[in-house]
Each structure stands twice: as structure tokens, then as C-alpha cells.
Image (tube, rainbow, N blue to C red):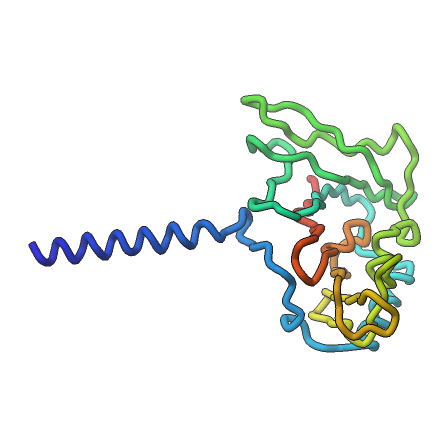
Length: 219
């Protein structure tokens, strides 16, 4: 009897721990936490110069023939990350991609997301319409990317704090010119097409975060 009681108590304790852990998990296996600058290797101004060369350069990672969709959203106050609606996939409660593109011989074309209704009323991604309007994408037209490199009104670049981890760069900004205490940041992943960058923009406090949640190549 004593052994049965001990086993029962152990089971209840395990269930309590599992329930507690489950409350902190975010859909997709990631967690929305304030950014930790220590996860990147310090690189400073040379890293910023390398990133600037990529942003200013003509080369990109979007090959001719690639058809892509992506979901980029504000996560302020969000507990669970939404799932992006995909093609021929039944996901109840998914959200529309926020953008799509097709890479053609003329260049990268930004399109309009087209949706359809599949089985059980679930929304599905249908196509990226690039024929209704001619919208040629270039790096120079990506204002969010330029802001992530140089800052914008109220955000002053702290070039010496730029950090790099492989193809991922993190740039920091202060509230005044000459500041060494970052109040906001931006993340650029040069292994991804520039059209989906920056992949993160947010405040150091974690109260404001816009993030690339999903990016898929459509077959």
C-alpha cells in the first residue's frame, strides 16, 4: 500500500510539473522572450560594414523560379504564435500569409496573396497574383530593411554594438545620438531573401516585437 501511495504522489507531482511547463510554451516550439544580446558573438563596426555591403549590394538569395510566402506579425501581447495557412493543407484557425512573391526573369515580383476555402471550411493559400499589378521588388525599395540597418526617427544607430552569428546580424539603436544603452534592435538574416527581412524588430524591454514567424517556398 505504501508503494502505491508513493507512486501516486510521484505521478501527481509529474503532472503538476508538466502543466506548469506547458503554460510557458509557445506554438511552434519557440518562446517570445526579450532578446538576449549575449547569444551573438560581438563583432562591432566590421559586422555592420559587412551587413551594409549586403544591403547595398545587388546580390540577393532569391533565385529565378522561387515562389515564396511569409508571415510577419506584431507579437505584442501574443501568447501563441499563429500558424500560417499553406497550400493544400487543412489547418483550422490558420492566418493568411502577410506577403508573397515570385522570382521571374524580370526580377522579384511582389504579389497579392490569394486564398481559397478547403475541406471543413479551412482556409488555404491559393496563389500569388503578380499579373493584376506590376510590382517589381528591389532592396532599395525595402524601407524596413534600410531602417533595420540605419535606424529611423527616434532610433539612433549604435554601430559598435552590432553583433553577428553566421548569417544573422543584430543591430542596436539608442534613444539619442551617441547613446551606448540600446533601447531597440533589429535582426537581419542574409541567408534569407531580402524581401522577408528584417526578421525581427523590437524593443529591448520585450514589450514591442514584430517577427517573421514563417517563410515557405511554395512548390
